[in-house]
Amino acid sequence: MSVSIFVLLGVEHIRTQTKEGFNSTVSGADLIVGARTGSLNLLLYSVFRIGSPTNNIDWETYQTIAKNSNVAWALPISLGDSHKGYRVMGTSTDYFKYFSYGNKRQLAFAEGKPFSDLFNVVLGSEVARKLRYSLGDKIVLAHGLGKTSFSLHDDRPFNVTGILATTGTPVDQTVHISLQGIEAIHIDWQQGVKIPGSNITTDQLDSRTLKPKTVTAFMLGLNSRMNTFRVQRDINNYQQEPLTAILPGVALSELWQMMQILENTLRLISGLILIASLLGLSAMMLASIREREHEIHLLRVIGAPPTYLFLLIEMEALLISLFSLVIALSGLSFSLLLSKDLLISSFGLQMDFTLFSGNHLLFILLVIGATIIAAALPSFFAYKNAKLSR
Amino acid sequence: MTIQLKDIRYSYPDTPVKQVLHIKSWAVAAGEQVFVHGPSGGGKSTLLNLLSGMLQADSGEVSVMGKRLDKISRRQRDRFRADHIGYIFQQFNLIPYLDAIDNIKLAHQFAKGKTSLSLEDDIKSLLSNFFIDPADWQQPVAKLSIGQQQRIAIARAMINEPELLIADEPTSSLDQDNRDNFMLELMAMVSEHNTTLLFVSHDMSLAKYFNRIDALADINIIGAEN
Image (cartoon, rainbow over all chains, first blue to last red; front, side):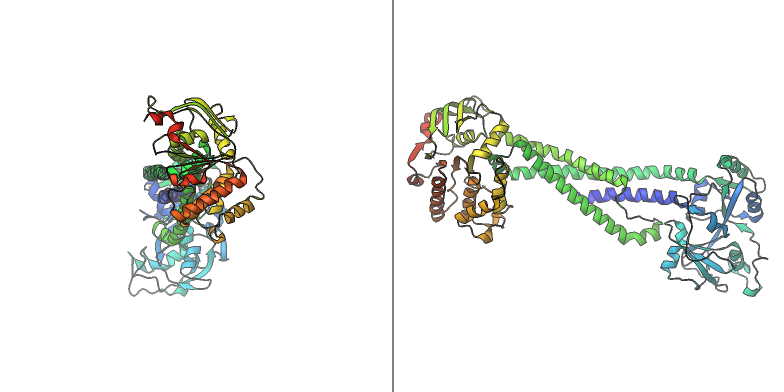
């Protein structure tokens, strides 16, 4: 019983949390633009840092679109490097101003300020916490996305100038640097390896002379939402370069549609488990009634009406059920607590521990209701026997 | 009259042709202590169940303390039993996982709201009357000896001060010593409260405690025919 409730609640919780997590990750952007690719792929790599970008966009293209009169703001995203498994994202300082998540909440700094210099870095809260970084620390970025990379950009260490407040989104796991910074660490690299002999010192680099050549993707905020579809079409038909513009909400719902089957299967399985356990409970109560024939007879003799016996058995079943619920809920909280880090690091799932959301309360009521129904049969037998007792 | 039966007939619902009980007329006066003896299968349980209102006779008049049990609803009979009739079985008189005090309280639960202020005290004095060690009061009764359990059973049956006490082979699970103690305590209890006692047993050696002795076969015509 506990196990089945545990599974049911667990699945439900993970499902809603995942959905919520995904939905809350990006809320301000009207369009996300990347190189020509599938909309899901673009969404996943640009926002959730899952998977790899297919291609980059030319810097000129970005400039042209960002200057479009319908565009209020544009946030370039440049991916490809990492730091100890956390992805490095190159962007502009506008990112901290315009990017919003959840219910249109802005990014906030727990400590420090946005990057102002070439080799400044702003860490997501989890990165800072896990790797125990604080302001002023120097970190070295690695080329590529692996957790252990052999090609380090160790000639150009970065200075931590800011740490973001926790958002519960992939932002927490991201290392933010400026686009110029990305450019700077790759300046004497080619095809993923350092060019031997080429040694431009850090002092020679100047953010003003460094121009990014490409970006991976960018987010757009529009002046008027009414124009979203027109701008999307314009971008998709952009002549100089094949591009894809997506509406994050639409792409997300596509994602959910794909997940639906899996989701429903999980729900079905846990539902079946619950039914099985309720039948088990019912059978157990029936057996116990037979065993407790004497007790029931005794209760009758001291004047208990049959209705009382009916309620007695029902209450017992309810008690068992409630007890199971308590065990399941505490077990679930406990295991969520234990597996929190694992869930985040291996699945990118950010879990909330408030198990008592509206959905879950509804579910708990459902379990209680189902218990009453399942116990009705044995209770009715007790009632019937009581009436005919001899 | 505490008990008055007239022309009672009863057969089990699943075998309606075969009557198990037919009583022309039988009565017990208030305050009387009656010993009814007879073999098992002689309609003994049926008689007791009719008297306690657990079963309804097919025909005839069942009146207990002047109340016609054949005329009132099942609900009223349950209530009547809780208020006016005490019952002691051969065994399994108590809910095994409850302690002595809770068992007795439970019996009080279904009876008419007598003031429960003094209930705890009443139970305790009853229990000490029956020589139950206070250390055992809070124990689940399953942990107590059979002798102790049967004495607690008397206390449970008497808590609502019933006018009629029905004892159904209450001593057959007891050894000789316990049996004598049990009988002495039971008889002292009923005479103190002037309770009508209907005591059913096949053990004729217990007859010496009673002044009226009836054979079940004389009461139940069916039993006589067999």
